[in-house]
Length: 272
Image (cartoon, rainbow, N blue to C red; front, side, top):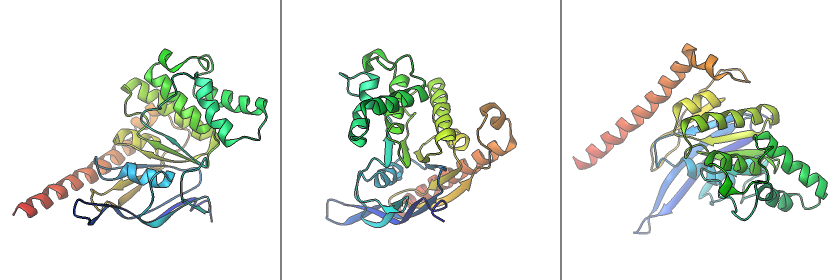
């Protein structure tokens, strides 16, 4: 069923030439399937290739070999069916929140009426809690509010897939938790298939349906995929009081620790 294989990464490889012209595989044989409406987090040590995987799904960088399929179509480049939220929203400073979101809506829905486009923009800004701030400019907003605009800009395109590249990485812990709830509330309602890159184990466990743990690079691939069996919608306090939360967290940290030990052992073997 396409619902169970809504997004498929098959033997995906990304290689870059080194100074000697040799192809170094940053990602090597990455395999993952994502169900329709599912949120899958990808986690691993810095430099393992997490963002490289997301950028290949987004079509922002070419795949060396293998393939990525989203909703039955092979990814050959960027497209509005895959909306990306980066760590920095990169808003145009001369446009208001409304104007920044409208820019993408006009490009993706050129045949929609002015009223329809306005409704799309207003709906997405209200969904991220900016109903009373949609006519403010970036310089008038905090980093958290700017990131809300980035999220609104993405969901306004009505994408088949949402790609989150450490979207809360620059934010303080309180704002981070607030935006986690914003994302989860949107996904609970819209059921958008989502891939999220994160380095935060607690965030991964709380937000995800499954967590894809990547091995260290070069030659990184899927090391383990862990199912997170919490019902939606989720209550943070309830979940963090369960033994399951801490067991998931322990397994995740153990995997990362094992990867680090393996990396150190490889270095020692080379020196020896």
